[in-house]
Length: 223
Image (cartoon, rainbow, N blue to C red; front, side, top):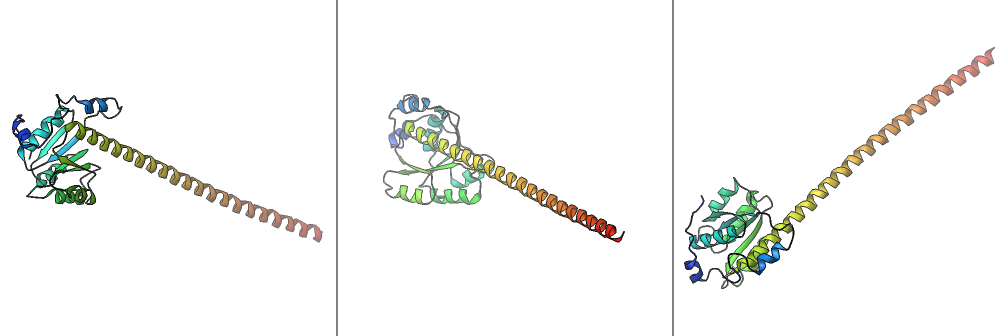
């Protein structure tokens, strides 16, 4: 189930959930840096999982304004349901959810087999001192602490996706190389079998010629 939220940001900003640093319409220094790097500007499809409606509203507005396609889930169970019908490049999960904690949500996602290469970023509060260690040790691809700068988050998201795409490309290249090697091995095996068959035919031919020669010798000796 998706959530639709109002566009106001004052409540979230007053709560100190996110930073406004460099956020003049999403065109801060971080955005310019990304624009200078080719291949990082495609629309990234992401799933944001958080039980706080205000946090979801803020993240949806900011990340959409930065050019991403954002889908929202108000808890881990909704996120798992959404993953059955849609594929995502990045999944952002708040660690401190009560219905299904963030780490448990991540574990269920990995166990479900529905990630399809999606990168997971765990989000925690500054007071959660060991959250990063827990998140990364449990298999998260990255971790970010509230309050965070959306320009920094944007760059980290794009770099994660770029790294994943490079790994997928390398995996595809290796798969193609393995297929070529397998085909070549089959071809060499077939060639070897053909050579062995030709050798056997030659041996039989030599034996036939020798037998004919011996018979001619015998007939000549009889005359």
